[in-house]
Image (tube, rainbow, N blue to C red; front, top):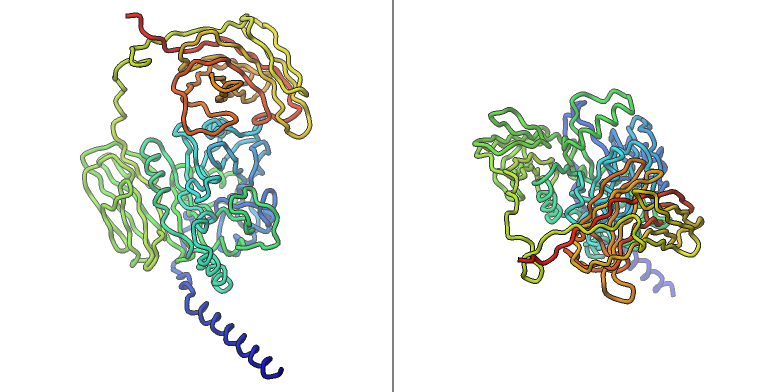
Length: 570
């Protein structure tokens, strides 16, 4: 008995020693501490952080203390929400500038709304394009969150018309999702000794997202951000957003703050005025005046990137017209041995050690600098781009539209406000009536209170013309700011297929034009879109997607016209 017990102890000790040896021998290298420190005009912080207000584990004060301990100067909190909560005013907590933003779930993916002036008067939801429009109306910028997450539920799926302002080129919480379980477990074990470095071993160069960023930045300004997506909470279900409670608050805020960050380039140091400093910080971010750093490799890092043309100097984040010549310059001040790579639309065109300079024709494209730390495949530093703009695409002068091979002509078909086909549709618990209120058709509605259970009220009209509708025009007015859902029923199935778009309405009459090709399926899934098609009915709907239960009000719809394509008579 004693011999067996001793054997068990020795075996256990030997196994523990082997595990300890394996951990120590496979530890990633410690982050290199560089000097000197950054100038006061370089401000480093954490973007995309969740607190206890949604699915994080730390209070804003606790998060600020962790950021201060990690040497950060700002934190951007991005708790899940619908935008109706007014953002907390910027505040310094433990010397860290805390900025309140919100992560919104749309049908096309998650969007971070940064810089909202106030809470939205109605829930922000639905199509990504419409949510972005509302964010802009509220004074903010829209950032596409974890756009190429390995999990389809979290991936960016919106149409090209959803023109976001920024993109998370890397998201720390998404990086582990495509790793093998054994690699994740190994990183978790190594994180007991070197947490930031172990987390960074799961990073890889996100080539697909960088291509997405280049394609978007080619046609409009799009800034890039390194996102932590920090919760200090492991998600046991990988597609779970927001996350449910867990007792395991890992990786900690302290660890993730030391892994990845964003450094913003300001014209002058922060002045300890929270509102003014936050405004300057967010303006610099929106202008592309920032770069990302993997702090788990080395830090601090200071990247300078600019271009010179005959017209002057173009800073990082700038855009310039194509021309005969341009000179790009980039430099890393703290790490002379780091390799800098200048790319155009993702392809390397120049490289240097510690610095680089490249001169040539100013060809249209998106130019960016990546800095590689020795032995690492993920960029250590990533700049925002400088874009050389080309000539705008020539207008399409192709042949006239066709229906079944025959030339087609555009005809505007009105649906008058006094058309007898206008009716009310609603759920049994809500209230709604419609009356003629020249020149409009008026809908007075009161959604049923309580938890959301498909409450809705709709103004509907049958469509007698069976030609192919290509777009719908109307004028909308409402008793209070709202987003009204415009839906069409196409022929097919028992009750027809419903497709939806939406429009903003308030006290001022606003003309709206919605194309069928931009509508999203309502209540079913398909990757196809109608270009033009006969429709059964047209509906203007108020529901709990963009209205809270118990909401009441009045909606006026006028000047309804269908743009239809009919075969030419020639």
